[in-house]
Amino acid sequence: MTTTIQHVLEAEGITKHFDGVFALNGVDLRIRPGEIHALLGENGAGKSTLIKVLTGVYTPDSGSIRMEGAPAAFKGVSAAHKAGVVALYQELSIVPNVSVAENIVLGDDLPTRAGLVDWKELRSAARKQLERLNQGHIPVHRMAGRLTPVQQTMVAVARAIAVEAKVLILDEPTAALTDHEIRDLFRVLRSLQAEGVAILYVSHRLEEVFELCDRATIMRNGAVITTTDVADTTIDEVISTMVGRRQDELFPARGVPGAGKAVEVSGLTGRRVKDVSFSVRPGEVLGIGGLAGSGRSELLRMIAGAQRSSSGRIALDGQECSHRTVAAALDRGIALVPEERRSQGVVLSQSIGENIAVGNLKAISKWGLVAGSRIRSLASGSIAELQIKSRGPQQIVGQLSGGNQQKVVLAKYLARNPKVLLLDEPTRGIDVGTKSEIYGLIRRLAAQGTAVIVVSSELPELIGLADRIILMHEGRISGEVPAEGADEEQLLTYCYGRAAS
Image (cartoon, rainbow, N blue to C red; front, side, top):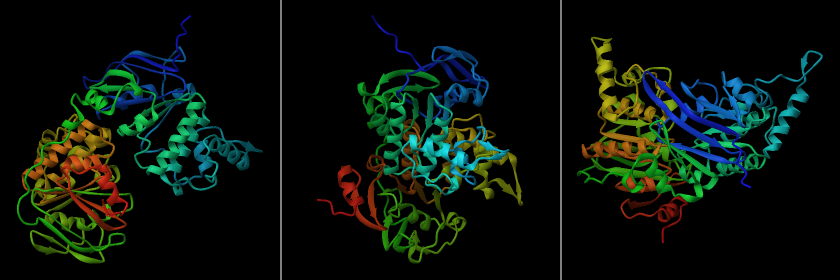
């Protein structure tokens, strides 16, 4: 006798459109109890919209949802929570200025005694949830804002299981975590899986998916392309399904750098960086690798005027420059695209046009007055050139996918035609299709003579994209190799401060 496998959550024929454009078109998704199920696809594939439908943020235009076989129609997030569907987003909804215990019971009835909050009982209840996750060492009385990123993630998970989540949806949960912290998170997720909690896991880090997940659903253009057992596929096959081309086709061909030195760094020293010297030719893409804390990001910030150096010199086209601010560096032709795009690169509450305009006031103003027509023209040109998926210059940046937000950051600085472009983790949290577009853009800029310096934690990215790679260890350059023909083992040897054999 064949037993039908029960699905804790089923979505069938889900359709959702905005302004006449389909964000979801007949999507089916079925999640089993106690499985970790990956939801994959490019930015703009429909993943975020589907999650918002499953959690009651959006009402679908058509289709149905079932929980444990029974029809479910979530009229808001609270209804989804009561049914056992909880989502944790990349930007955790931790309240930093209240305690860990209060964060865990946030939204629930607080235990009281004689009309007053029973703090002892509250902390005891919070501690029990953390102990379920083997996180009892997190002090429940501490302000949540003082926790490490992984501890904040654990607190958010504890809050989810406190409401007896049957389906836990995680959206890019490891984006801000170190490798060691990711291991801790995975142990917690596996313990929840053992309890029968179903986990829907959204990540652009495919290596994590293959380590952690049981099945994967792949979306493209608002539709499900396939659902498969992770053990029955490969990373290359997943990428091909997501973007319609093989992984080895993601990187464009290398160009030929020009002569001379577009930028030269000599003996640069800061808080972590120690006596770093290198140069980059016009049209060259220089990759910088290294472990977290090696000084990569600090090096870019000093070159860009965002952080002062204690000694050393920076020369642009052979002329020494001593810019003290980001604005001064921009005026000299050096632009930095920061690692934290949401907090440092864009204003999420403003439109695409306003974000691009704020970095290009001279280009959009006349006689000290900002011209709306110039803002629209500049933004429209950037949207077309960078293929930003949007409803136009007026769309709010916070409504865009992560990859398109990154394109807005790039557009803001590329409008200034920089001589030197500094990119700090330019593809972090971005799908492989958008990565390929950004790789192509970087190569086009290099072909026009721009010197590009890219910091990346992904060694395959540096190998495929750069012309030359320098590796850093504890603030110093530990090695330098041509990118073509380099291998990850060789680069890792330098990252750990050991000479390559």
